[in-house]
Length: 79
Image (cartoon, rainbow, N blue to C red; front, side, top):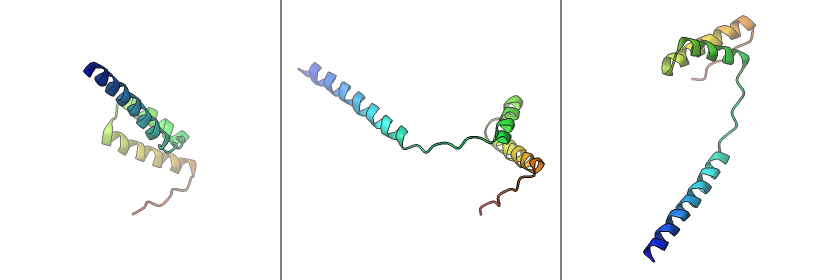
């Protein structure tokens, strides 16, 4: 009897866990596609082996420089 209860509890928790995971995935917002400049900057950062804060700083400067070369107007930074 105890064995049946434990098996039922295990199966129930798996079902509820997968249902919870499915609802969490459905709530994620869609990601914006990367700009061509962003893709190139990511490739350069990969080639340099950058990670974390150094990668973020490199990509920000790289994208800023790329937008300047393309003649695009930069959005003002939010304060």
